[in-house]
Length: 536
Image (cartoon, rainbow, N blue to C red; front, top):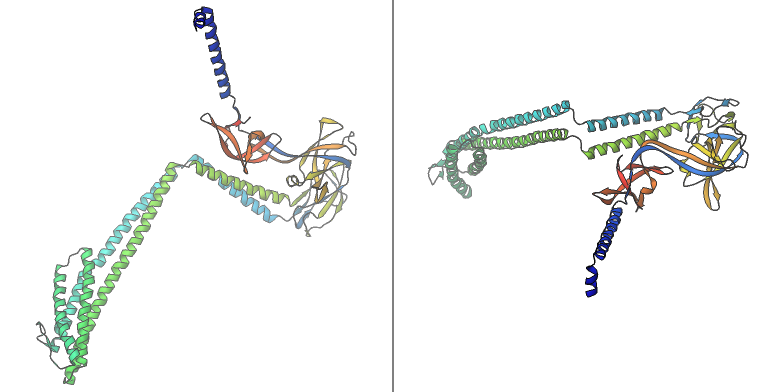
């Protein structure tokens, strides 16, 4: 310990120790900083991408090329005959295709419509549209007020008649009890009314005690009528109570009729008169009951109609306000993304019809002479059935085998860039696919399909049997989003990239399209200018 203290007292040793500590911290900071900046970023760019299929073939003497339509149909045009000289790209024959042309025109119109919609979404709502939406709200609000006012008026009209109807009912009931049946009873307004004639005991008893009840009902009926107000709830209740009181009075009249029918000792004249009086009272009371029931039903129906009309007007106003709010808010990112997806769908539809229409036209893939014509105008030809044969003007063609995984990408007329082993990779020759064998070829247990290409120009250096490296351009897109293929990863059937969020790497799911030699098309998930992390 004493030795250490002695050493530390020496200035040189102190300086060296401080330098060593500082150097250590500096190295650590440099290492940490280098760790934080190791993320390499790649920007999403727009550009052209070419999808290729690369195969190796052999040069062989050129044979006649058999040409066929890729779909069946009726031959509408044949523009060559045997012996005619033709050039590459010349139209030879056409199938009837008016239906496809119409469908393509419709698909293009739909695409134009979707593009216009997207432009409208991005530009926002025009002032004229906002004014129309505001006017729609104002009109809907006025309609609601009008409907509510009419509902109130219509309902009031029915309630205004309630007092008169109940009053008429009371008058008819009072007439039936105190006038029409007056001669049937003695002491009829007392607490002990008696029949004025003889009848069966049961009929007599029923008629007499129900007469007392009828008098009580009339008294209460009159009190309720005098106290009746214009309040709707009171009027509704009065209709219900009036019905109940009329039912009891009608029951009394039915009992009085039974007493008359079971009477003894009445003269024929009195019997006839009594029956008439009772039936008149019953008819008048029944009529009053019908009037009250009809009015009650009319009020209930009007209430239901009012509620329905008001609800409809309220819903219309709410919808108009929602529409105005949407127009004022403008388009959301989701709405724009959805419309962009609609455009992609419409574009795919156009491409499908364009592809279908192209298969109704037969073009010469090469320069040569027509050696066969196997069909005539008006005939129905099957898909892949030989229509025209052409002998190539070139001396050589190239045959190659393509695996079943790649053959679906290749179409007749696809351009080909070729190099020959014997001439080196810098010598490039142009050509195109002129034939695709529909039957498979099995090589060492693997399925292949034979394709044939021709050179677009003769070259004396080309000899039969030479090995040819072929790059077939199967598809091409311009102005699409591109990334190097190595930054796109796959897992569980999904593709993703790494991006930086607040300095931290995170995954984002993407969808891809064409794959080129070094680049891959990004169809969804990223925008131009965004940057992804190169995972090392």
